[in-house]
Image 1 (cartoon, rainbow, N blue to C red):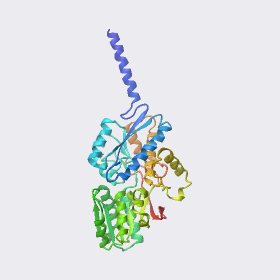
Image 2 (cartoon, rainbow, N blue to C red):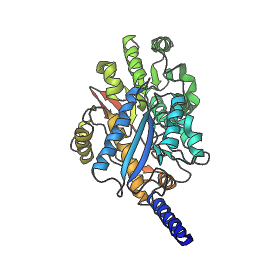
Image 3 (cartoon, rainbow, N blue to C red):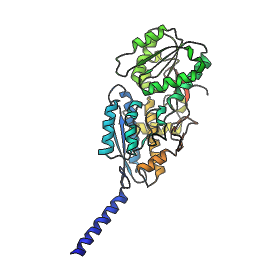
Image 4 (cartoon, one colour):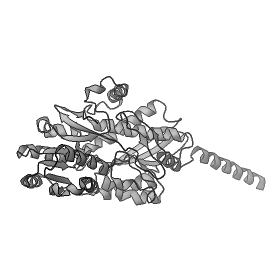
Length: 392
């Protein structure tokens, strides 16, 4: 009897060992990898929900082609409405109930900050984030958190340098969202002005709960500023562009990449109101004819037609989502068959590659002390119905 009991225990032990081999990490089995995300499908920045849907469509393509090293992607994308408390709730669900292996591509600076400490305590990768806030480049303090795109301070500095070159001595107005991302842009812009900071004659902020920003634009115009830089999300970006034009204010206008989406901000504002705007880009624009015969853009259009057919093919947010998802898949491929949360984070901190649709000359590079994957961008100008790259 004892012998039979021992045999049964041995069998159970062998089964447990086999299960452990089949599931080397939470969120990873022999057949799938669970990837989690929060995204604002509702709320004040819901136009960004396009990105999450693009991620899902990209992973659908990967699964249709056999997955990654034999594992399919189980993608769980939850709505957080760009509300930090909701982000906390949904992220806890992803980690504790859904048991994902990685939190990928979640959008937002305030939302990302709200869960950063929790995810680092759980040793859960928080990577390829939908934000360029410099606060997420802190490998010593938060080694499990990493952004993706060029950081906001660097972007804002690029605008400041061009203003000092092209509009020297002209009074400047500044506007930004009253949150961590807006503050990052503002700080980077002011720092780059240096001893020309006195040219900044007016400054305004807005809350994402504000119904309009008309009063801020009226006040900024009254300052006499001839140059204007603003950071906004698409909804407010469209309002700002309309208000500038409709009040008769005609400053040289620079806007953050966060509001450069043609479908999300420019077209709703009206193409006629957007002429001459300056912004920044790090991705190929599907509206730019120079990429018409580009092999990567051809692949993107084929993917859009097959896997993301309801999406707007003029919206660069679908390019962004594609490139972000491609980054995630590249990290999983580099991890090989030994996939775990720890291995994924190790690969994220060792990027040295390029993914499709990044502009020429832009690549992803990271290291143990460098959590800024992308460090270059290009300035662009809006003409007609599209953005055009400015000379380097």
